[in-house]
Amino acid sequence: MKIALERCATARCAVELMGQLAEDYGFLIQPFEVSYGTQAGGVEAYDDAGEALTISDSLGETWIFHVAGGAKNVTKSVWAGQKVPAGQIAVISNNFIIGDLPLEPTDDILFNPKIREAAKAKGLWDGEEPFNWNYVVGFDAMTFHSGEKEP
Image (cartoon, rainbow, N blue to C red; front, side, top):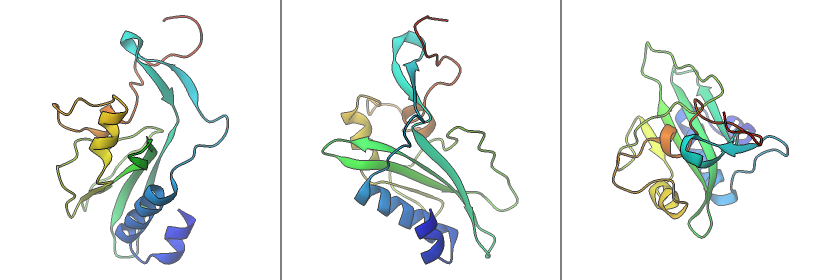
């Protein structure tokens, strides 16, 4: 993020640059940041293995940026950015909030072009349903548990 803030004058530029850097170099979580566990139905998952950021600029634009690990031999990281519409707010309370992604990036939604391929390679998305970042890349916070016991 620091590099993007140093090099970019707009929030959109920062999202594009952070996305490109994530694709080129990958996203690495901090040691001891991840909680391993399972979701409902025994689906293995990990909590806190991504970042959700907001970036605003002097022109009045605000963007949400999400990044997470990628898929081996596909992409080093997946990422998405969504512009917050003028006059609205976005609350990121320690979770991903970007929803459905269009088939191609738009003026208001940007993402790694290999995001769908990566999700299929990791078994996170079947390609049939709409691609919803929160459901595919995020985890189900309502049923996530860690430790040895089922809730």
